[in-house]
Length: 201
Ligand code: GAR
Image 1 (cartoon, helix red, strand yellow):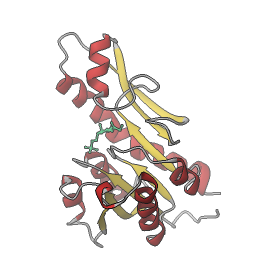
Image 2 (cartoon, protein in one colour):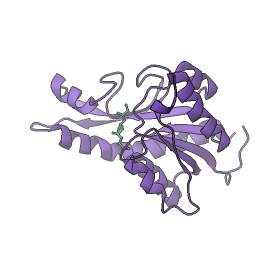
Image 3 (cartoon, helix red, strand yellow):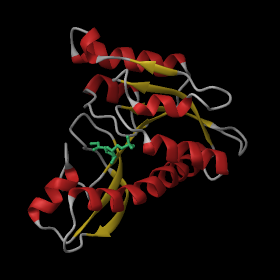
């Protein structure tokens, strides 16, 4: 794909909850450190606080709810999300706290164009409560990972990681907060690096 420096890559951001990583992407775009635009935000939960973060964006970013319960199969659900992304001309899909596994059909349709952020140093501690898992195992270092997405849970080639120390007396909350701060820096930075390496030539 040939892109001039001024063309902004169209991102589709998938969310399920709070949306602080979505906010980090919006902030990096506003600051000019990420040459992209959010073309659409898709949530599998109608009540996700992430959706309200786009209400004030100008021009307004469309937010679309696609609920798993509205579809008979996982494949039909994945197809519905993929159709929304295609309708909005999405070039790169970002899973920013999207708490579902997308199937092989979706991954094939967006081959090499789906990234995920996860709050551990993968391949350690995929899945839910990664920070709690890290504490239970007594690791001394944890962190966050941005990776290309395959059809497995938090699986696929690793693009970037940031490590943080696990300190004596850490709770799930304190460790999550330390990791989240790094997530907010790592995700936009890695997307920008992808744009420069893979789309800007
Ligand atoms: C983040 O910590 C993200 O890494 C994690 O969910 C949180 C979402 O926060 N994602 C996963 O665990 C994916 N397996 P946010 O909604 O505030 O961005």
